[in-house]
Image (cartoon, rainbow, N blue to C red; front, side, top):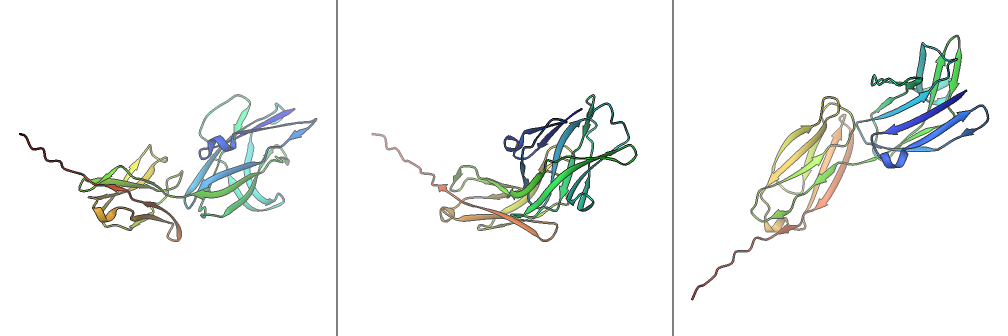
Length: 231
């Protein structure tokens, strides 16, 4: 029999697209390292093929720690995508903390009367993402909008977002489809000469206590007016 495991994360796609193949002859293992957004959550998508000898109902669980006494268990979620002889093993992680590793997870499949298969591969979650600040070209006296995107891959209660460095009007916006929205804070102001080389910081507080921030240095150009004299 042959099992094929495929893992895909919506974040850092080019870094973690790996395959692992397991057969009765050999096991080839690829170490997986996923970067994830701090504070909110990450969806990890995967599929695995099943031999004909494995029949429904099948219980799929991601776990951390000892297989006999796991410290954490994560049930999978389905996207209702159907492929013959394949099963989804997607999972979701919440409450991720900036700069810390959430540890290694492994996949367990159970079926029949006490039959269990535990994949030897591990998935390691490291939390790296910060808010994303987008700054347009700034000109003295011209209205400007600077955006700060909240890190995250899933819908959670809206974060607290605080701007420091300059004074301006702030508003909230969301883009995307339900359950996959991106949340932004928009700082609107009219740049002044003294704003040049000013540090602007966007601080996001998630779930009341998890803080993550990004800082940019503003570059403001002056608008020059020329007077032409005709002879």
